Image (cartoon, rainbow, N blue to C red; front, side, top):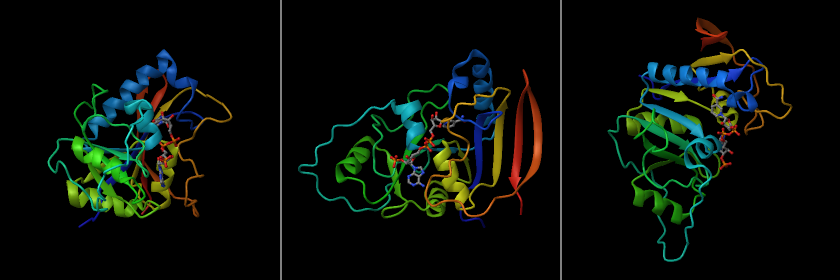
Length: 240
Ligand SMILES: NC(=O)c1ccc[n+]([C@@H]2O[C@H](COP(=O)([O-])OP(=O)(O)OC[C@H]3O[C@@H](n4cnc5c(N)ncnc54)[C@H](OP(=O)(O)O)[C@@H]3O)[C@@H](O)[C@H]2O)c1
């Protein structure tokens, strides 16, 4: 039996592989963003995972917590499962505990409303942040002492939350980290017929994440679907 979930990297990109930029703000793109969300639902995964920057941009909106360190007893660095039987999980890769959650579920998004939050941390996180998560009833797991090991994280997600299928939904840095560890089984791309071309726009896989990728990863074509208005939904699976 597989020790980790089947992992699908589901992303929306321009023709030049950009995942952020002005093209995301246009009316034309909003049609494809809806398609992206519909496909997310279609996968029927009970969990999705994003990097800290993406979570901040779309869900906590940069909110920072004011947590004093005084009178906080040391909290052991052991995983904390607040809800083992949630209908859906929103998993945030937040190594040092920066995300300013104010409740233990996604509240800012109609499609993902109510999804239980799970924080992925390193042991460097402050006790005050752990106390805050526990107070709110947010689950957390540790992925390493100072650096994250996503194989360990994926196995814990399966073991502790019974997650069999996981949607990896960016940004580029976390995608790259999963790719480096050979953890991407399938790629699901919503390809928008637009070229952004900005010099500094993020791409699907940002190789500056650590550790750097060493070998190319091969994928096989699985399917393609016309989404209308020139957009495509393309799926690839990792070559065995
Ligand atoms: N088009 C799409 O489908 C799509 C989907 C998702 C996101 N996006 C866009 O992508 C952009 C964000 O992408 P991004 O690449 O800058 O950020 P990201 O992957 O969302 O988050 C990066 C952060 O996550 C943590 N992290 C990720 N990998 C890590 C690792 N291996 N070890 C330790 N920490 C790790 C770090 O947090 P700390 O900095 O706290 O250490 C890191 O700075 C946003 O503009 C968002 O809107 C687009």
